Length: 348
Image (cartoon, rainbow, N blue to C red):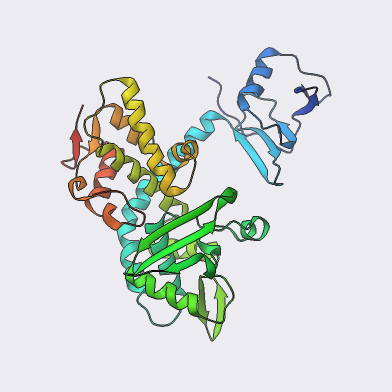
């Protein structure tokens, strides 16, 4: 198996041109490609027809296999399978480090969110709590302006409703124009969000902090900086969603009872767990599995291992419920790190 090589995306590549209802491909010299192995490699990349300015790597072992511009004008990439697997392993290894840093982050946020007024630390602590319990995307300012799709950092006051018993509800257009509804209960964040929603100065965005008498919108970089400052690690808001997706999947499989004896039944149980993650994170099942669930959860399930600690008191999975914290999260860490622990159960 050839080693991966770094693709030179500014260098020569294979071009794509429409021919009838299909496509034909040309090398850097303008010669039409007829090599069946190369054509099969390109076919397996499944480059969307809507992409324009397509560049395809001339080497089958290039770490980037194709680039194009989608219908929304965004540059998109197709990576080599082994490159994706390597990056995913790094991502999920970092996720476990993030999980171990979470108690420190939660403790700091619990203290900071009780501060008086609207200092940067209080508002960013509230944002961290919302990421932790609401499974939000952080959002980007450019997407809010261009597509009117929102995440936590770009949420408007109008997207938030305060209910009884410290309940906070969010209803907003998210990525790809999908309407998202999220609810959680948090008394300290409720007080902060209520005060921010009622303020008259500082713009239409929900999250803003006050410094020297002036208001400043909270940016995604502010939230990520707070996470890094408190944990001392190179973590971002996205790590919340990766960890949450992994925990939800592990809980769903743990609550499904004994590992099914047939391959079909095991696939069905895994599909249900993926569906839970997709629902809570607001993704498609395919994206949820590929990006937000550590594959070791499914590997361990196939081997007969699930989490057991704390599941008898969990009840139903609910948006924003802090029931996952503590023993359940420790059990999930043991599960993905293949630790022998009393928090795990052999159910095969």
